[in-house]
Length: 203
Image 1 (spheres, helix red, strand yellow):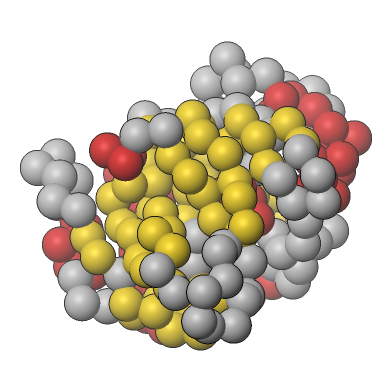
Image 2 (image 1 turned 120 degrees about the vertical axis):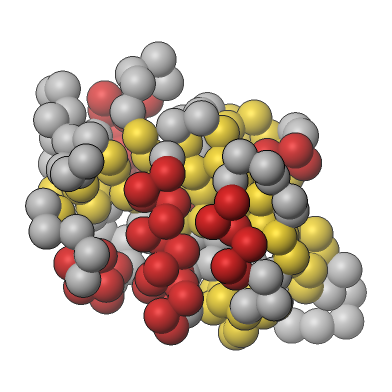
């Protein structure tokens, strides 16, 4: 089925590499800078780098329809976009998130390695009978760049996870019509772009 996809530009980070990678597989894709009324798209992608509080301030100002979590729309959050899908974040003080996912976002604990976590990291895939496309991405590495990470209420939702400096990092979380990706699929070579395509087609 043809999907109308929108990338939300909250003004935090360069979104054009994401846009260009999606155009390979999806033709009907737009970048939107503001939308206060009902969304006409089938799926929304929220990317971004920056702080939780910054992102939520801009969402409330420019995309207030997202705050109503009863609004049934498919959403994929990438990196910071994933973080704000949770109920609460603790970057620059406690801040309420969109609340689509149960849990919170906390700073990585520094033990031996440098924070932030930047670079290529191996991921583990959790077996799910009803999500078969994940098997293609076993033993793959993806590009990460973050200082905060999600803490899920239930690890059952973590379809991919990684470890950095003994921090357990949920790397792909899917719950019904909502998906969160901690790494940057658009910067993770062909397998990252293919994974994003698979998530969009199966969400």
